[in-house]
Image (cartoon, rainbow, N blue to C red):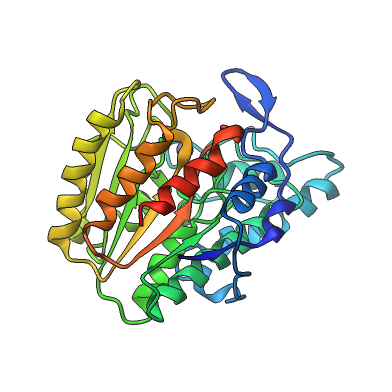
Length: 334
Ligand SMILES: [Zn+2]
């Protein structure tokens, strides 16, 4: 399997996040990527595709904000990481924003996603890994793995959140469509619903989004991921949410996965992009499913049995002692 990883993603070093009412040490830390890279052994440095393919997916104003947000934060006399504290809920009319705090709220949906000095660089190289993986499968590789970090699936066209700044899986999908692919399926098997990916493709039929995740009634991101969110307009029927209860083990997960895969097979996509999160693991510190390491090999085999050329993008997974082996077990199934 072709593996892409850039150590430039380590530049994003968040200190803390607001969680359950108090500041907690950041869960999404550079060590995650180092551990996964070490466990996998060999990887290729991604090619630099520049910002153009990112603008196919993300809003120009948002990207411009992301590039300068930390510098603006410093210029305002602040130390540490930039974080929002006011949000324009309920579709406030568009206003011209100048203060950094206003812009942070405009482009965020939570307080768990600080803009560090290296956030933009890390998200950029994460996207370049996904683009390199997309290019590799387009050039004939059977499959590829992009060691993306920070994650991307919570980031929408013009917003960040859930540790995500740029949506690498969505960027790879738009890239492949731009290179002649007609249909892409995205399968999201992270513990959390991929709300950013859902939003980006919600009104489109050229991307089928299928997500298996913890029920948003109990789990982040709460406002997205419910079973009745099925897409809109031309995208109606092309968004499939399969929420599951806390405590789900492999026996139950496997059956839900099977129904998701049936939908993907019927769609007959040119490529499959998998948003893989190892935070469905039994010991994950911020999640509540009960999958074990061998389950990831079984999961991957079930997916690979469809015979669709696949790009796997790394999303979550926060149990440091196991995350390397869990990724390795998943890739082994291909
Ligand atoms: Zn997650």
